[in-house]
Structures are given as structure tokens and as C-alpha cells.
Length: 224
Ligand code: CTP
Ligand code: MG
Image (cartoon, rainbow, N blue to C red; front, side, top):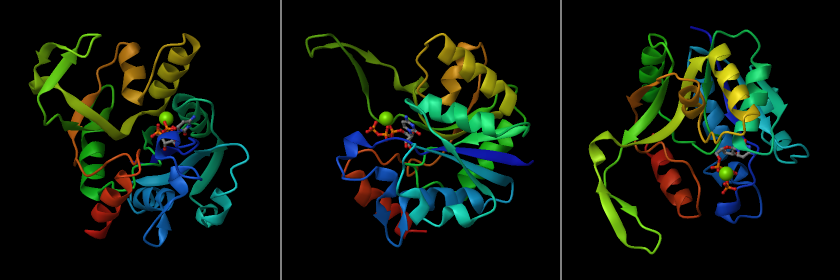
């Protein structure tokens, strides 16, 4: 299927505490954003990549990504969901859309294949996810343990997340209009009553969030 990928890349990277937005930090010979977008562009089913960047972004032009005819740039927004929505609007009438964080450069092709296989046969799309490994506790407000939460049904939501374009655009628009909290695409679909599928992905598909994630991402990328 012809899939359009939307990459939210308009964050400031506060938790990374670097002097530039984290998606423009370099690992090896490329920025994190380039690692991420290249992986998407190398997949035969992905026909276009729409990248949402901040207004006034001075770093994107340096990457060379805009020289690829399959890459389009749109203006991101205040929250991640706003950036994703502006990408979805630019996706027009593409049947399928896949949303993937700029800050996840270690995505593997096998995971993309598995996600696509499930999403195209699912009624409400699918997301990559990893089973929780640790014992989980729910805290009370004083730092005590209220209870142990059964790990069996808990997953970490990863990206990419793939849906019919119109379904996701409608769900995200309505969630934002109603000021509902949407921290990933699946949550917008869930709020609209849908049930996306979980596809087990690799735990190495980390979101580079804090300084120590850089070494880990560099390690995973070096094993390719
Ligand atoms: N993002 C975006 N637009 C925003 C906020 C985030 O496009 N208004 C993107 C980020 O660039 C990142 C992805 O969404 O690729 C995941 O967000 P996160 O890891 O939280 O990145 P930041 O918001 O940049 O980091 P922080 O929360 O530490 O500031
Ligand atoms: Mg953020």
C-alpha cells in the first residue's frame, strides 16, 4: 500500500538539556532526524514523508533532507498532537498514514513490516508496542505503594502508529477541539471509540529523551 509517514519534529527537547533541539543532535555522521527519516524512506511501501518543524527552525535546512523529492515540510504546533495534525492535513487523500517520532532513530525494518501487515487488516489501525518488563507499582500521593499493577496487560506505546488517514485526522481533530489529552495517535482513536491493535516491536526503538539515551541510541545504530 502507498503509505504517507508523518514525523513530528517540532519539539524543543527540554529534557535533553542540549543547546539545540534533540532531533538535530548528531549520532555518527547524521542527525537523529536524518536517521529517523532515512529509515522510513528506505521502506518500499512509504511513498512520502511529511516532517513537522517549528516556525523559525534554523537547523532543518542544514540536513539536506529537503533535497529528497519525497520529503515535505509543514509547520508544527504547540503540542505534539498539533504538529501531527498539521502533518495529517498535508497528507490529503492518502489512504494510510503512519506517525513516527523524530526522536526515535533506531526503528528497524522488520518492525515496520510487522506494523504494516497488522494495520492494513485491522479495523482501527495498529501501533508498535513493547511489553512492560518490570513489576509495576501504583503510588499513593505520599510516595508509598498503593498496589502492584498486573504487568501482563501493560505495554509501552512506541511509534510508528498506523491508521487510515481520514480516521486518524477526524479523531485527532475532535480530541483537540474537546481539549482531551492525547499523547499518542492511538489515544485519539480510543477516545473516538476505536480499538487499535498492538504489534510487538523491538525495545531498542527508544525515544531519545534524556542525555543518557544518546549513548544507547548510538549503540543500537552501530549494530545495524
Ligand atoms: N514534537 C512536535 N511538536 C511539539 C512537541 C513535540 O513535533 N510541539 C515532537 C518532538 O520533536 C519529538 C516527538 O514529538 O520528535 C516526541 O516528543 P518528545 O520526546 O516529548 O520531544 P520534545 O517535546 O522535543 O522533548 P521535551 O518534552 O523533553 O521538551
Ligand atoms: Mg515533549
